[in-house]
Length: 420
Image (cartoon, rainbow, N blue to C red; front, side, top):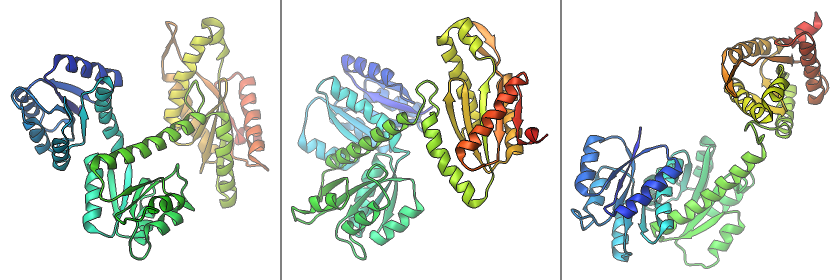
């Protein structure tokens, strides 16, 4: 398991740091040191295990920041904690390659320092594109991004940027210089905004030119933000993180709006919107598309015997298990104990074979509900007859699942059974 090294000689500060690390439930094990000697010993014990470090600048056996130099020499992302603000020292530390510089000015400062660990962890999954025709300027920005563990790709002008972006569709942020050959930053931002919304791709303009109107022009062309060269690394990171966190907030709101509040699965409304697109594509390509409705057998008995609270617990268990097995398809909780699955590329026979296996696996799992061990079974209706609309296909699957329930449950009815 990757570790975080926290080096701090103040017992009070260390107590706060321990509490904050525990409250954030970071995906890393924190190890603690009060001196440089202890920090060195911990590194020698776990030389390849450290993800990042929070380091006090002044320690009893390292009063001049020697511990920071040691940690940086091991290529560990380092966040510096200090009791006083020193502009010259701050500049020196950023030039050495620290991640951030945090002054101990209350609980918020410690929360910010520990939160930066969480930010670094997230950054590993974020791809950014740096566009600049100046090798030196481009490499400087690339290094700043990599210091914060972003994935980075590069382009030398606007035309190259479009090519690189097409090759890397998972890019979340683009930062572009203004004055470039072939296609300048304004044109690049304007062209890309036809395809990408501000919540799909963050775009930030940069320029060393003195015109006061540049920032307004960039933003009017569709940029999310603007930076003037030369910029301090701290300003660079503040702007980048602010924009990324705004995008993540929108993504979280969108995610929550699409989900069933109890199970976390897609809800019925989202299913219909997404399913219509899949239905249209299948219709245009004359490709198979199987629609299945799953209903949990005798689920009402749980609510009657154990109460609705335990019924909710059971639904969460079932939803998690079904999503593990069917999550590669469009899978949603439709209503109460009904689930919808739309399976592009499968006809009713293949879909029935798949759900038969899912049914066996679900039945084999033991769940404890209010102290009682239970096994769950389901009935399902499956059709790959696309009829005249998605609604009609769903209606047919619903008829099939009703037949399965009327026949005693724990069975699957599909188009082949209906034909017989």
